[in-house]
Image (cartoon, rainbow, N blue to C red; front, side, top):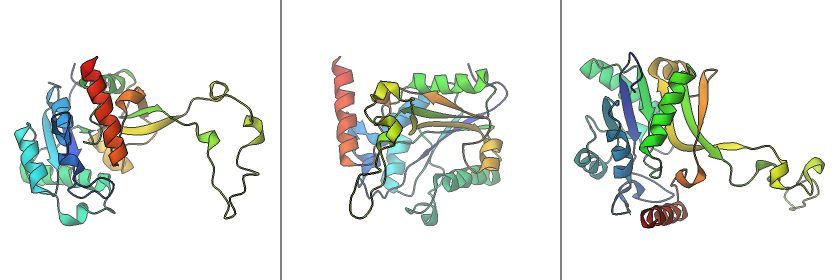
Length: 237
């Protein structure tokens, strides 16, 4: 079902530059460019009104259009640096659409191209949580792979005297509270709430918990190799 009473705009941010894995958004994964997976996730959802890729790169733009997304403008260079934030890119998209086309969506669905293992069902469930909980924003998370209580900073001399809290010494993971992390796959929010909060988080934000096997966020060659393995294993199962 669609979210009653409002248009849904999907924004896929895809810069051309990447220090962790150069050219990652166009790098072939499972027989198609990485960004194509995310565009196809969005196009499979019939309740999404528009899909816009925000990019500064001509190759990414061409691939995006080929796979069914819109690229009505090229992202300004100042919003495509390592220091530019995703929320700045989102604000730019919303401002451009409002001023150029008088298009003002009620909801924004941010799908990062670095999460190719999410599914259409994950997007559906995030949308359902927004409706069921009367939320204004839903963000996807997954369980942490390594419990944060087993992590700490180290002094210059690397002494581990106070590395672990005394109360967790000799405890198994099953005895510790479950922790979650942002997995970068799905961000869904009312546009007004997003702009008011300058992001997706606030008192009316709720979590959608995804399994770890669909939560790979590609930022390095190792992440890409893990995603390739999981995707190949899924196809072969």
